[in-house]
Figure 1 (cartoon, rainbow, N blue to C red):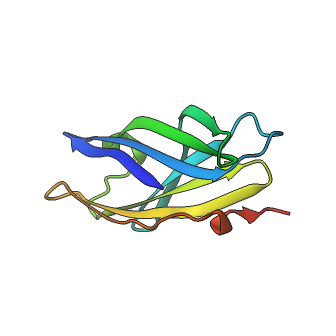
Figure 2 (figure 1 turned 90 degrees about the horizontal axis):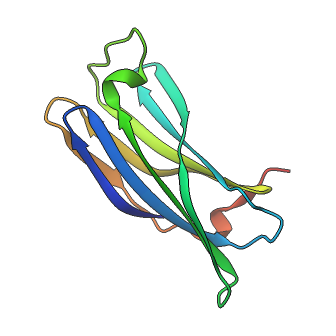
Length: 128
């Protein structure tokens, strides 16, 4: 997975990621969700798939997700003072890849720290 853009403006997290995966002719709408964890509170939100490209030469595809999340609105009726851990899950047909990357948002100094790793085709696990 590639992080195309990730920054915080005031209380808004702007994030855009792309992932390459094996192409499946039967899949027309890949899905993604973003998970925010603060203390014992967890929020799972849809992550908007903005583009989906097929690469015929390598029989793969690229999924691009882009959205802006207002951090103060993620936790309803809960003031999150701790760091926020973020992960992204992708669903593509009968396959899924869970928890990439691991991102930690430090609320006090608005610092973003993440552990990136290259997602391989073997990371896509069958849900069956």
